[in-house]
Image (cartoon, rainbow, N blue to C red; front, top):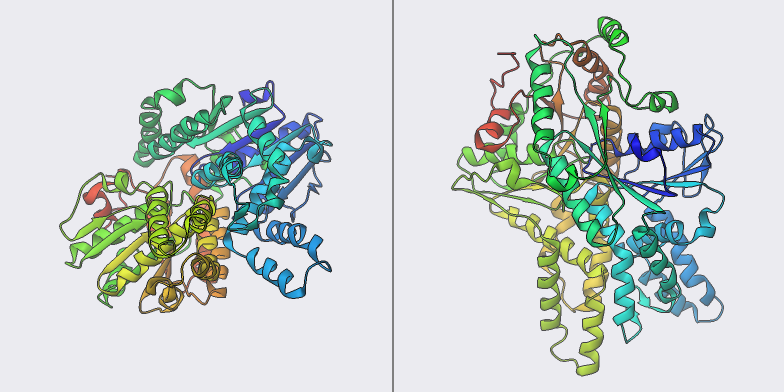
Length: 593
């Protein structure tokens, strides 16, 4: 990896979900530690899987990784960060203010906005305060999928600007005095991000058009923020060993085509190509081998693979039951990069082909519904996207029109400043999500949701949202009031947990299922995407990956899922009406012809 020739102190890894950010970030941290450097590896992803990859239990503070003495790692846990942040803000007032006033402050610091500002505050401390990481030579940030990361990286500017312009000293988090104490830290964070001698942004992508497009978008947006020291890693590039295997040849060709069409902006960046690993990246030793492919050992391993799981149902077997109620909401959820958008679009097309009215939408800021549909349409299938910017403008106008109409000039100015805070976007997106769910009362609504951690935060926002809306307006929309009852109604909402037959996606999906059950939402089925098991493979590396997926297929079908369906890997990418429709047909081909 070329960026390790002269590594900067801070290294950020970001990219579309499922491209291998965590593997590349961890491998980088291990290589630096093996070179004798003291390294702190930090995950900012609410759905972090650092623990599983490194094989050590992590918390909100640096923890030593036993096999590498100079490597420490930690997760920025939003809830723990929020609790620590809340105590830091409220603690000084205990014993000074009446109990009722302290309790009121605690309630104000218990919303979803506090979760975000707390995670951001901790992130800024690690980035902008050199004393916080003085004992380390390098700080490696493994970040959430792109949309969430962009928001995190732009927050220092957003909050800094908000506080610069705010004249009333109030915000959705209460008095700004506590935040203003952090203002210098936020300014230092912005400065560190833009310092090419201190910070490298490593964009991780797969040799796939959507991943490369998203890396290009991230590159452009962060360059506009002054983050110019960028490097591209294309992870998991496949080279066929057996040219008679049509699936292997197709996979190699698909990657070559994507790399030939790489966006100009990315092509200008320094690049590293990492070959596809035959196995998952779990444990320090496998991380040390990242980027190496031994054809002999691959062939030997392929001949000694795991026992195959029996035939599992195809996605087509779910459709009849999904349409049985005649209306309702279908949510596609799971880790980034597992194919939620493809599954959501395929299900929407299948239902629309049966004559029902269907609306397909997404809460994922980085989703690519238009690309999945190839801009093709059915008459009874509408497609949209919950646009954070548009929803924020709409929500702000609504609040000003209702809550602001009877205020005097000073009161209206106070409300306008409150609405300009970055937290308003969270509330506005949540409101749009509730509206989308409500529209499932008279048609089918299929929602492609954001990657797991962000979605759970969105669902957790229900109660906090009630409080915020009550504070800014005096009315509670019907869609919000009935959101949780609708999501909990199995006759109204069907959750499809989408995963890949690999360790991290399966275990993250299991964690998502536990979170949903805590919220009293029971998943309807699991959909395992891009499965190799049904395919007649001969390429040794493909066969080894086919063998590698067996334990995870078995775990899904025997441990986690009430109901399971699989989608075999396709030679032709499943895009456009024809490609998506193919995924839900009972004669889905698995032959090599």
